[in-house]
Image (tube, helix red, strand yellow):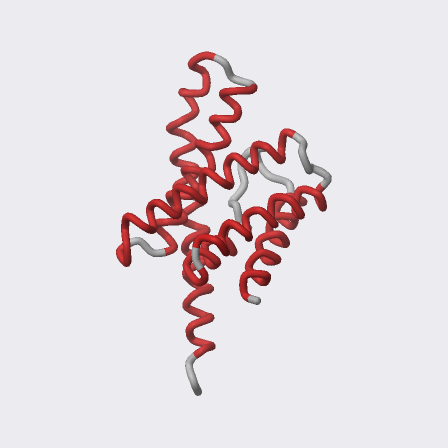
Length: 163
């Protein structure tokens, strides 16, 4: 049941953020990843994968982006970010919580999208010039998402305690 809640939350946040204007076309917080982080830390890898897949498919259908270039960029970024988040969490054990794992995911997301851009749009060394900016932006947005996810975790834990 909780996996459906996380997947629905991820989809709703993805659609809401996609409908908002952004300062740059590629610059977003990635609020949907709050639900993905929660799913990973609460239920495990398969729940996080389910949340990502549902977010991508249903969210892009609702936004009219299914199978468009936006969809493929989002898919590459989402799965690269998820893979890095899972690896960092596994390697860090109890030392790496939602904030650290999410920061890694933000970087992975941006680098995954850059890889697609490199393949399709930016032949040659031009893409390499973007790497430092995308690492910085991914770290910042991933950290913000991780902090928000941790705050939700703490709030949920407080609500689970007997009165």
